[in-house]
Image 1 (spheres, rainbow, N blue to C red):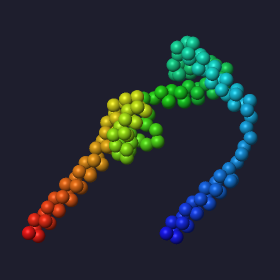
Image 2 (image 1 turned 135 degrees about the vertical axis):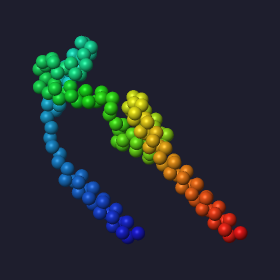
Image 3 (image 1 turned 120 degrees about the vertical axis):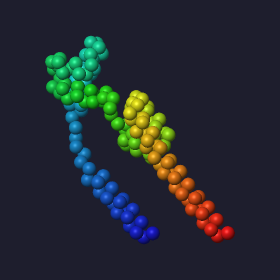
Image 4 (image 1 turned 60 degrees about the horizontal axis):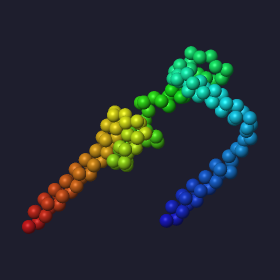
Length: 147
């Protein structure tokens, strides 16, 4: 128990050290607003011209980072993206059927990722069923050898 207390105390001191030494950098509020006005120019262009993010590369905007903005936005729309935090397999493996639903919702019903999530759900269930069968098989064998 003392080891656990020492570990938790060390962890608490480590966390306090990180938060106390965090830099409180000042920021320029006008710079933030100007960045958002650049983004709003891009979204207004997309909405008014019914353009895609890949079409932005051919248009010369006054926005300096339009290529980066277009690349980021196009990557967000990529259908092969994994679900958040974990891969599809681990969503199914760790959370079961709920993970399959999370993968289906977050990946816009990507069939390949749902299949990976289903395999992730099936493997632990199969291992559990196999271990129960092995346990009861050994239990029955031991019980029959006693009589």
